[in-house]
Length: 419
Ligand SMILES: [Zn+2]
Ligand SMILES: [Zn+2]
Image 1 (tube, rainbow, N blue to C red):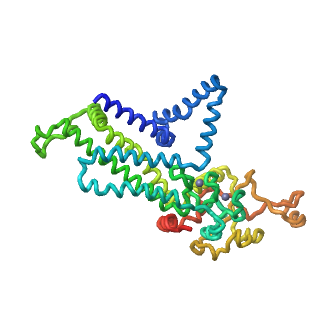
Image 2 (cartoon, helix red, strand yellow; image 1 turned 135 degrees about the vertical axis):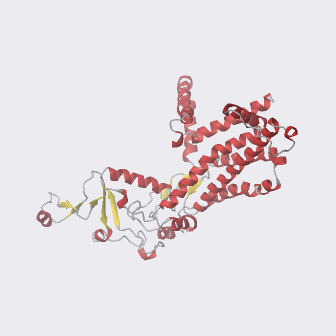
Image 3 (tube, rainbow, N blue to C red; image 1 turned 90 degrees about the vertical axis):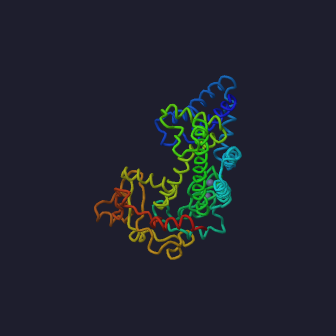
């Protein structure tokens, strides 16, 4: 039993360290020991290592590690994806054989579906590309209108040389412009974008379901084990009123009993605890993406919106009515700024305002002939006057999100409007 307990403790410790390393930075853990351990792992221990390396090898080891780290962070490689798959598969190989004899037919029957679903969606997420190519560039351009806030026409990707479609973003890891880019996901080793957003959300849902199921099975099996150990059936003679093992226990005794059960059944116990620890993460991601769908945003756009919010608070944002500005800035050529009627987005849902941020917070100027400038009494030597068409934006509420059609339409668009 000593050996089993030791193995159990080692497995649990490893799971805990992995959990802290990956998720300790999340805001939920701020000002908790988990955040402290995260800093210890990622900052204090590496710093100590660097100073030792400095003395021993003149930083040679650190430099080669940094090169490796750079590769891991900035190049496309499947290591995290492999880790993700291993985490699932190893967990299942540990758990299922240990639990098999005690599971009912029904409990076993749902296993294949729950096990295969996350792997299948992971595969689809990884292999479905939203990259913009010369073949699909035109259809990407027509998918969404420019909102003249986050996305303006006339910008070209300096790497791909394409006109940037609305809602797209160049990914330096995928080395391509991505349609409706959400974020680059290292877990699936691909950008999450227009074509795999469906698979990504199904991956989140199926992973959450699997984690819940693993936790649930682990809990009932260990609970059963505790019941049999602490309240042997022979004593209760199968009576329905038999007391539960935890009756009248203190919290300390309760925790101790569970620690015993986890150590006795370390394969089930360790997987159950890892699953339980990962549930908040899967649910957190899922809730965040439901929020994004509700708000009609991608992850990329949500960070752009928060930049705008800050700039509005700094009073450097101005807006002008599109209809008025068009006098000075007529539409660009049709291949760079598609005609409204060609864009596959509800008719009438088009930019009404043109948004700019200024460097100095002063109203944008417009050039006028000297004569006109003097008449308005504001002209300076260069013949520029304040452009009255621009008004200062004082609140984010004044800006409409063109891509928000309401929850159900956003959901449909996010999941099924694929290129
Ligand atoms: Zn690009
Ligand atoms: Zn990417």
